[in-house]
Each structure stands twice: as C-alpha cells, then as structure tokens.
Image (cartoon, rainbow, N blue to C red; front, top):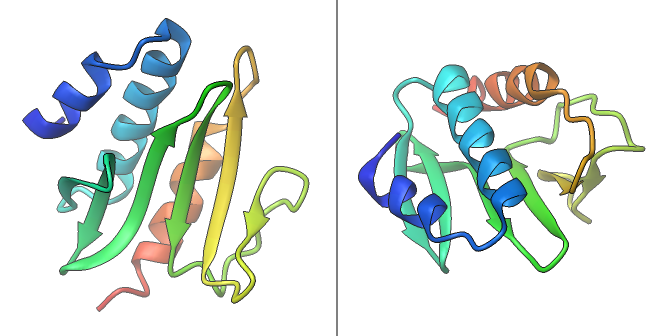
Length: 116
C-alpha cells in the first residue's frame, strides 16, 4: 500500500469503510502489481502506464469502486453499474455486504490488460 493511500484509508471515519478500502487496495495491488497510486479529487486513483485503471471512495453509506477501460467486461449487472458509454463499471458496497473481491480483482485484471 502506498503512503498516500494508507493515509487516505486511515482518515476514513467509519471502521467498516476503512476495512473495505484496505481490501480494495490489496485487490488492486494484486491485480495490477505495477499500478501507480495517487490521490486525485480526494480519492485514491490507480494508474497503469499513466492511464486510469481504478478508483475508490467513500460516501455516507457506501464505498464506491470503479473500474476503467471496462468496455469489454462481462460483469453482473445486479452488482455493477455501467457508465453511459460503457467504459466504466462501478459497484457500491454497503455495510455488511458480501463482496466477491476475487471477482472484482479478475475484472480489474482483465480491464487493465487492455491498457497499453
């Protein structure tokens, strides 16, 4: 975990959101080992070869996680919401929700493979 992402996560007020964000960071690092992390727009953004790969952030009642370059992904529509252009997939994670981090990691790895 990078120092900037660690600091972001440690400043999250709700313990459950902190836990989810730690797991998302680990999932991203596993899927894209060479990802560069930085805080932009008050959220951790992960880049591969200088291009956006993923971002997560917190809101009052959820954690949102977005995968970029997602046009070719086949994600469960009951879990993920696609952007209008289809290039991004977002999942809103609620407290006590079962999260399939392996599925998220697989989708992220697949999307990141399209980044040159």
